Length: 185
Image (cartoon, rainbow, N blue to C red; front, side, top):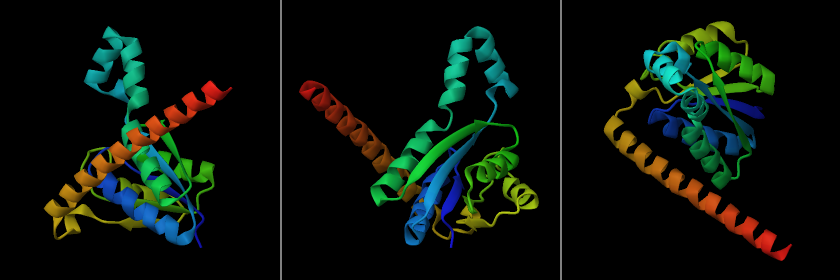
């Protein structure tokens, strides 16, 4: 069966639902996950150009940070469930192509995603992806088809907050372990 899933996520509330489904699915298969964020190119936006002009360092920081919070939450969810994972970000104006190329480069055997069209960059992306990739694509949890959408959004927010807390606790535990290791050395 599938051993390595590419799970593209964005920075919408649906990412939490996508991650939860992907982690459960990967755990049931004993598969590895690569969480991927196709970050929009800030230089292609008016605000991005203004930020670059005013403070190129802040622009570089903003571009590098895009999507990192969602990827950290995804990594935490996978680690809590005992699913091996890694995270990748790529700046692109063509997310479908970036997803396809990343899946190929990482040796993934399944692309696992949610189609929802909440943001302009993702609108129609699923169709474009299926046109260009030869890999299997598993599309789950189409937002418009959810009967209890408000309930899922609320649960998604709560889950995301719990993952954020878990990520902070994980970082604090790592800091304590490192401090103890240095004290004993």
